[in-house]
Amino acid sequence: MPASKPITIIGGGLAGLTLGIGLRQRGIPATVWEAGHYPRHRVCGEFISGRGHDVLARLGLLELFRQAGSVEAHTAAFYLGRAGSPARPLSAPALCLSRFAMDALLADRFRELGGELRENARGRETDFGEGIVRATGRRLQPRAEGSLWFGLKAHARHVPLAADLEMHGAQAGYVGFCRLTGGQVNVCGLFRQCAGRTDAPRHWTDVLRGQAGTPLWERLAGAVFEQNSFCSVAGLSLRPWRAAARSECCIGDALTMIPPVTGNGMSMAFEAAEMAIGPLAAYSRGESAWSEVRQSVAAACDRAFERRLAWARCLQWMMFAPLLRGWPGSVALHSRFLWRMLFACTR
Ligand SMILES: Cc1cc2nc3c(=O)[nH]c(=O)nc-3n(C[C@H](O)[C@H](O)[C@H](O)COP(=O)(O)OP(=O)(O)OC[C@H]3O[C@@H](n4cnc5c(N)ncnc54)[C@H](O)[C@@H]3O)c2cc1C
Image (cartoon, rainbow, N blue to C red; front, side, top):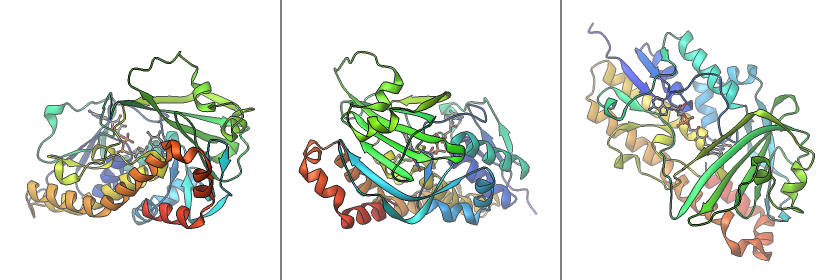
């Protein structure tokens, strides 16, 4: 039997580690290069919703998430400025788990399965080629359509919520809350700074709190933030990309980023990783060429994500549309049909 060809995955986030685990479960030699280390806090709403659940179950990871303290979310509420929707049941429960725990447990699992994980090892642009998968996360874009997008995340206590997941649209962005284990709440926001604006510097807690008098402000009025969980990220590109337009084998945010308001990015990372396992295993065993692998992973990702990305763009637009700040927003928030449709179409 000829030896299996090794697969190298550059980027040890959710997509890279999930792929590494799937390959190791099939006995394929796999190495992950991760520029950072584990555990560490990441900017993320930490709310897993959509088809990624089934991927986690198929790869035997769901039980590990439960053991690590994941909690189920059953209800969600949306707010635009001062107007809010009632708490509505989610069509399927979502899972909430801190990235601090999640990334570390995936890293441990990959190592247990015999994968080689190199921490503090950064791949260079010239490293990508045959047998190498790009799972390096978001692509840096300092300005997108005239705006700088940045994200902030921290865990807090004493945040009273009306639903397991709350999403608050504010003037400069949106902030999501979800319950984590032990009375902690994830507070995570995506913000837009328009080109040419030079706002006075503000503390990150003030950016998250938004405008006085809004439900968002009220939620955070008595919040006690865990300072060491704070993290930030800037230069996000929210433009959808087709996988077929990428010249490398890409998965996760390295392929395309879905607007965070959908709470579906992690699911897409798990799904893309799973779709890549079979073609990469076939390449490793010498049954298919690298170009075929790239094409079949790209085609599968495009089929799975195209419609979702289009609807997500629409939802992202709605979060910032001045039109929806008045009564049309109130009407939209109370429409059960719109809620169900947008939720279903973005997953
Ligand atoms: C504000 C915000 C809120 C979000 N909220 C949610 C949410 O509630 N639910 C949800 O499902 N999704 C959410 N997301 C999206 C989600 O975080 C991402 O989709 C997910 O993390 C993508 O996983 P990934 O593995 O592709 O990238 P990442 O998790 O970012 O991992 C990429 C890894 O690659 C490493 N890396 C980068 N370059 C190199 C290199 N050259 N060499 C080696 N390693 C490298 C990085 O250190 C990193 O560990 C949110 C995103 C943002 C910005």
